Amino acid sequence: MAAIKKKAVRKAKKGERIRQVAAIPFRLTARGDIEVMLVTSRTTRRFIVPKGWPMKGKSGRKAATIEAQEEAGVLGKTLKQPAGTYSYWKRLANRFVRVDVIVYLLEVSEELADWQEAKRRQRAWLAPADAAMLIDEPDLSTLVKTLKLPQPMQVDQA
Image 1 (cartoon, helix red, strand yellow):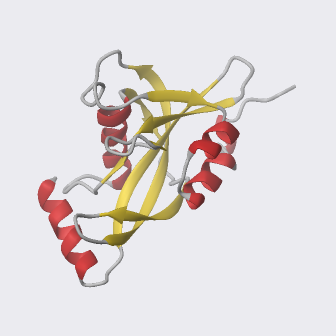
Image 2 (cartoon, rainbow, N blue to C red):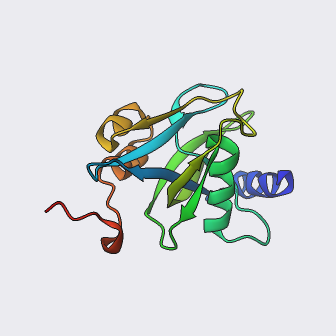
């Protein structure tokens, strides 16, 4: 994974846009409302969604699933179609670079009590509107706030 990050940084130094993948873990409440999980970043402790660099030999969807397990300790089904994209400025050692992120929805089936980054991150389940207020990246905040599940997955409110 470090080799992919180095390659991305080289691209950024040439002025090219670089990509990451992310997951928005979600669940439905007993009433059928959506809740999303946010995690804190390791350094600034801001609330974010699990994200990372593309992984060689893995689809973006699979890489997002792995990031969600490592960073948020959740397992589940990642939906095939991306939920959307957002861009943000990533801080590197001596500059900022623009990163485009493809976001996938992950329907959580299990929360692990212990996971790879458990000691370095906190996680929280929130209504999308509440989660959106805690997210600093405007495009991601909008994506979370206006989150819509694919039609077959939505629960009828009869």
